[in-house]
Image (cartoon, rainbow, N blue to C red; front, top):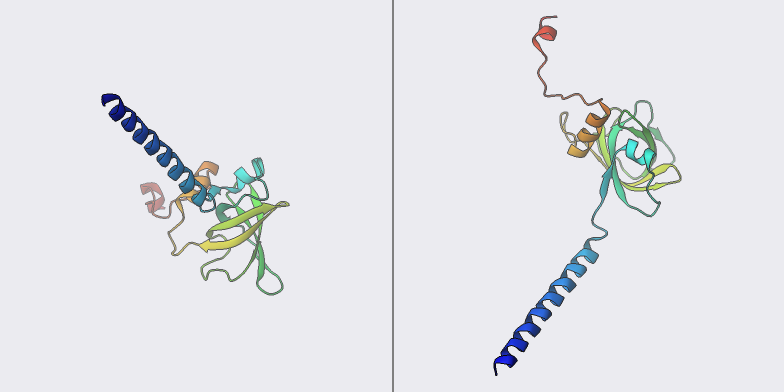
Length: 156
């Protein structure tokens, strides 16, 4: 009798472990397309991702780089101060999208051009995504808009 209880308990524990492993695998499989990694232009140039990988790119829209093509196709360049990546997007750009402004795009890097499926622009004059700020700080080109000037600069 005692051996039967112990065997049943071991079976239940084994079944629970299998169910937990199966549910973890199913959750991971369901989320595989919903996870997009962020890359800065310098990271893309240093180690180009495969063409089938969907990821996010962020940085500043390079000055004098926006070219509007036929229809809704727009090409421009994104920079983090260390590298420049050309971007192609077909669709309607956000109202606040412009040269020198922060942006984040989702898409694929194909044949040296980032083919964007979605473009997000900063929503006010001081907002910039954390990933973009970190990438710009790494390049040494980030200027904090909320920083107070030092006393010397204020007197000049």
